Length: 310
Image 1 (cartoon, rainbow, N blue to C red):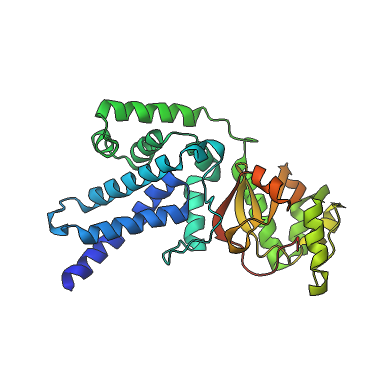
Image 2: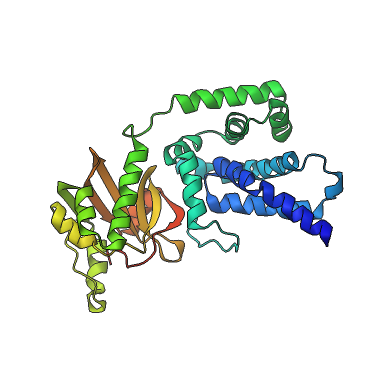
């Protein structure tokens, strides 16, 4: 029993680093947690006394699991970002919580995750391990089953692609901060804070399905939703105390949000920002339109309240 406790302690000492490695490779906190949990299960099945370098052994296992996962995505990687694309709620009891999710996202940056997703699996693994975690090319080569020279070439090619990537609007992190602050002010009912984030001429546009959804819930006290709402005060009033059930999401690589009961996006919130203000918000509820938007649901919920569109 003492030996089991010691192994658990040693694994937990490595867990945060392993989660960070897996998250950068997979772009999904849920998938990263699954990979780390599988590494723990494999460690329990192995003869731990024969493992000389536990950290290196676990890194190899997690990296190979991530590589297999990236390869299995196949054509889906070419069609959309795979950051939490699943329409099902994660069943794992080890799901990353909101605080840890926020730390992971902040540590990498949403724009970087989108850029990394453009790399092929071997490039991504080589770049993450060597450039982000200083793993030697000999070790990377062993994980990828390539020569050290090939591993070095993969990392170099990935580095050039990352450095040359075109990041939308030049300031994606600030866009994300504004969107995040908007939902925080909404769920806390902070009217002045909402106003400060909205351009005076902001426009809220809702598609016919979103309007119909709001109308169907009027008996439950939901507010009416017009197809277009103009002006900061009117838009702020529409969202005041609402949108708490939304989840942060990447919409075509840009931070927005979605109302996703049972993990399936039902309404998508798309934001346009200029000069640190929100100039347009689109509510998309038509299922066909949502399927075209490449919605990548992040694991983080915005607690409290009801979705603003309903």
